Every structure is written in structure tokens, then in C-alpha cells.
Image (cartoon, rainbow, N blue to C red):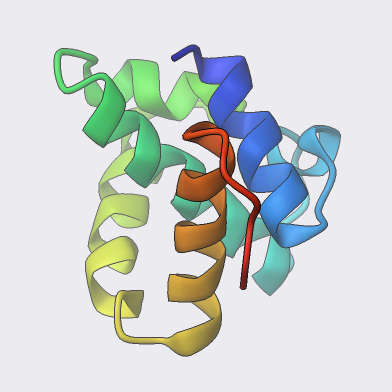
Length: 99
């Protein structure tokens, strides 16, 4: 799966446009969507560097990826975050998304 497919799946699952996910907005919802993209990219492309993960969402440096991966772990028990993650995975697998 490609970076763009993951971004589109997260956009669909969260209701946040791909442009916002890869843009400069720092709202909570945009950040959570960005965290989800980076987390899913890490699983799909484990050979990617932290810099590549950050660049995929329009960030300037690897610090964004480090923070996002930490937050993915912390938020894994958050019902909304987990629901969006699960819905994005379902979309990527060609299944109907349920949040």
C-alpha cells in the first residue's frame, strides 16, 4: 500500500481532508489524524526512516514522527483514536469502516 492510500484511508476514517492532514494545522483533530497516518506508515513501511515518515505528512523533521509514534502508543486506549485507527485499517483492507 502507498503513502497516499494510507492518507486517504485516514482522511475517510476521521473526516479530515488529506490536505489538512498534510498541512500546517495544529488542531487536535488534525494532529490525531497525522499521528494515525505516521503510525500506519510505520507498520506498512518499517524500513522508512523517521524523516521519511515525517515528510509523508508534510512535517519538516523527524521529531514529528518520534512524537507521533509515542502518541500512538499513549492513545491506543483512547476510544476515539482507536476507532479511527481501526476504521482506517478496515478501509485499507477493503472492508466497510466502522468507528
